[in-house]
Structure formats: structure tokens, C-alpha cells
Image (tube, rainbow, N blue to C red; front, side, top):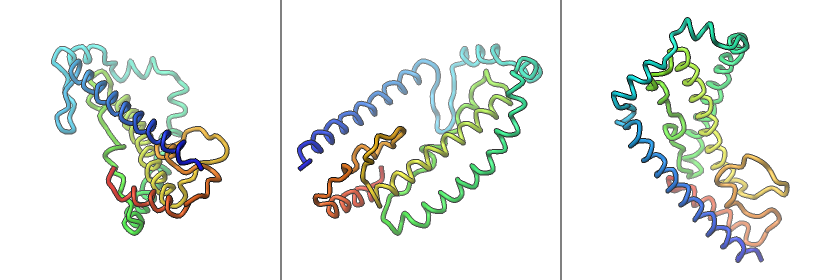
Amino acid sequence: MLAPMNARIDQILSQMAALEAELRTAVHDQESRMFFQIKGKRVEFERSVRQAHQKLKKNFFRWLVTNRPQNLITGPLIYGMVIPLLMLDACVSFYQWACFPIYGIAKVRRADYLVFDRRHLGYLNFIEKFHCTYCEYGNGLMGYMAEILARTEQYFCPIKHAHKILGTHARYQRFLEYGDAEDYEARLEAHRVALRKAE
């Protein structure tokens, strides 16, 4: 019924994924050559760039005086959210640790999503680096959780919605069409088998 269309969509999606990977590599290579080198987890800038960064850095008191007052007022509310984030992190990590081996799903690598490298930027003062670390954690955690949930959805119900939704994960485009019941069980099993491979 929908097999020829699905094959064409799969082909286009594979081409898009290959092009996105090639673009990411090209952009990363260009950035690395121009400004910095990555040595393990450490990011190192050329000496001239480091010196320029130091000149641009605002000291804490100047930053405090020139900062927007609303940022200071809402700070406790923003940073208070770290408690629910830590709880979510613990719950989702435990869920993956306990359930993915039972389902035969390859685990999501935390280090692929939680990256803390903005602390190497010499033009940021310690408060700005603290802000960046919080944002790196929060957004990285959301990406990590989204991938765990996407793999769970692929295992249990890899079916697209009838309504258009925003913010779908990368796996969603390969899900089965809404209402396409032909060979559902066999295709569901194929989606499950695909999850056993590390991605």
C-alpha cells in the first residue's frame, strides 16, 4: 500500500542524515582550524586568541553593575530549577539503566549530550561560566532524555501522529504512518531490532 512511498522517504531521510553528518564535520573542522584545537576534553586556543579573550573579559564588579537587574532578580528562580533537573536526570538514567538491557535497546551515551566546554572561554568571568555550565547541563539533559524517550517510543509505538506536531525527534520520520496497519507486527519488530545496534 504505502511501501513505494516509504522506500522513497527512507532514501531521502538517509541522504539527509548523511548530508547533516558531512556538514557537522565540515563546520567542526573549519572551527577547529581557525580558532582552537580539541585535546581530549580540553579545548585550547592559540596564544593570540587567548590574549584577545582576556582583554574582552569583564571583571565581576563591572559585570554586576552593567548586568540587567531582571537577570539578578530571577536568578534564584532559574537556579532553583536545578533540583527538579537533577531529579529528572536520576530518574531517567535509572530507567535506562534498569529497562534498556531488558528490552535489548542500546543505551544512550550521556557524554554525547552533556558537554561542558564553555568554561574554556577566556572572555567569560566566573559568573558567566557558571551560567553557561547551568545551560549546558539543562539543555544537554533535555537532549539526553529526549533520545532515551525516542528509543522507548520506537520500541513500544513507532507510529506517527495523525496531527502535525512540532519538535519531533530524529527517529520520528522513520516511524510507521498513522493508520497503516499492513504487516504492523513485523514492522514493529524491525524497529525493535534496529534499537539493539549502538547508534
